[in-house]
Length: 302
Ligand SMILES: [Zn+2]
Image 1 (cartoon, rainbow, N blue to C red):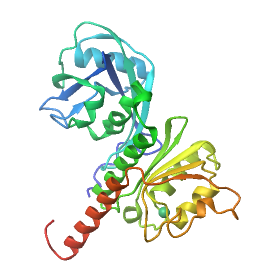
Image 2 (cartoon, protein in one colour; image 1 turned 45 degrees about the horizontal axis):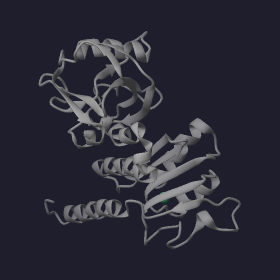
Image 3 (cartoon, rainbow, N blue to C red; image 1 turned 45 degrees about the vertical axis):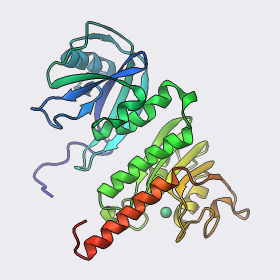
């Protein structure tokens, strides 16, 4: 890895990006990036970086004029995502609803195609990785009655698990949710961090505690694999109200399989547990990871 230039941002100072969700009869507008810009031909929600001195709404009005040639009235903020890119850059993405605009959206600088897409189909597009979480939650934001929140947040945790996989880590992901909003995300980072305690749940709990304090009352933890004894202990100490996990862990599970630390009457806090949500998807990801690792250690190209 080259050390020629410092990373453009840090977790304390992410690059802030605004994105617009142009809404029309259940469809949203996606832009495809032109051939001569970074991430060419990938799809994204229209928008861009907030320049110095701009507030998010001003930045978005400017971006929509530049990219789509429209004059938009910016609606409420729908969602915020913190995204850590594999190159070390950190982004904070703000997604705003836009239902009113003047002019007809037409591809301008940096954009070569537009598509009106049903909200639930956005995730099937080849979109930028930073937009992926929002693509998952969008149908739920627009119509919460049509979605199962446990399924949805588990899918976001699985997204984190896949990112861990791509980074060479055992694929486990976690998100902490309070009042329907993600407070913190985490993915396994034991190998990269050279630290046995950097489990997905521990990272999510530490990040949430930095924002909310040491008691995470009112929070639900979603994690793709049943927590181990260390993480189960942390869940108890942080007073997490509810735990939703994916696959059971037959070798180290401490939330019902080998132990049940999170519901032990002798401890001073217990949490509700719901296991088995999208368990197959999580187990498949883990099996595929370990198969690939075995093949690599035998010198077989996967
Ligand atoms: Zn753990």
